[in-house]
Length: 384
Image (cartoon, rainbow, N blue to C red; front, side, top):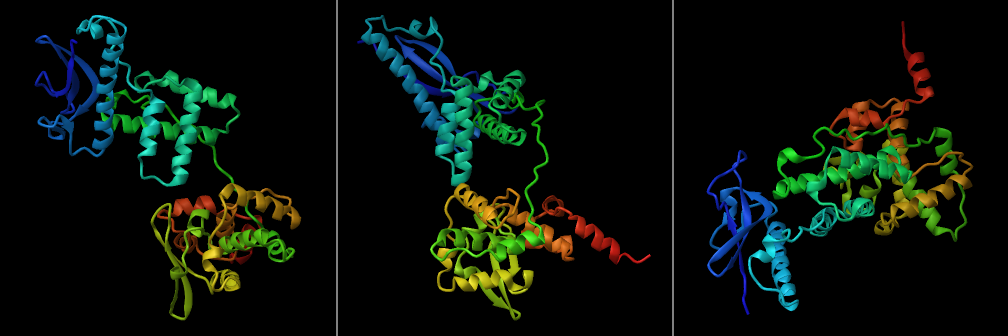
């Protein structure tokens, strides 16, 4: 049986491109003749181990080497199929047809997501984007992407009645995949379809609870048997008083509580930003957050455990109806409510910034809706 031998070779022409990288190719050898096929991957000379024929010292070397080995397997499989069909085995087997097609954008993207170290929520978001891409054009490859392709994908999502910001979220996820492809050498840096493409967004407005609406929730009496709703209500009010995100609330530990300077502090690093926040539970909102914590003394782990955010939001809708609040609000509304009410009560925005754990005060400004009552209060305090 005639057998073609394959190996990976690097920089066969001994010439680097303008970025200082060179191409990795597949060499096919038979009867003292050779043929070469592009892998589409470019790396620096220092990132290629000629002896082991593999990529080294590259931030994505594991995924790249796996991709190269899978590509070699496609050539082996094509040769085996030709042998089973009784075809003559020679290098023309590949020259007379297109080289084995590289994996689709969606296929490569799923492997990257599976092997990434991102949070579960981020992984789910990326998979949702990949599902949309698969429904749009399942066989698309990175080389197919263009400005027109992105425009058509955007229109595809609009026809599915997705909001402008949801579409923007999926386009940003796709852009991160394109950036990965550039890092992997699958796409040249100057081939990104996002160079001239603008991702459109609109201002996001989360519901903010007014002081009287907060009082309705605080005074809401639930049946003793309804422990799930009571827990959700307590967790939501706690976050209204402290400004915690859902992710930060569910990652709290009893060891995050500290006594210092005569006050009880909740000190933690944000899951999203890793920025440390320090919240005086006995001072903020007259110690209401601490009072809720005291209800769960010895059961702090239970208190900080919540079901998925989507289920919590459904429970909040029910609580809103029970409290006769004619407003749709979500768990994240607690964070916006916290900032807005603190400013209404006279807290400086820089103080609110520290409490929310924002690097930039402009981020805090986006959370602090100015109530009409705040404007009246500030103007009344102005002395001319």
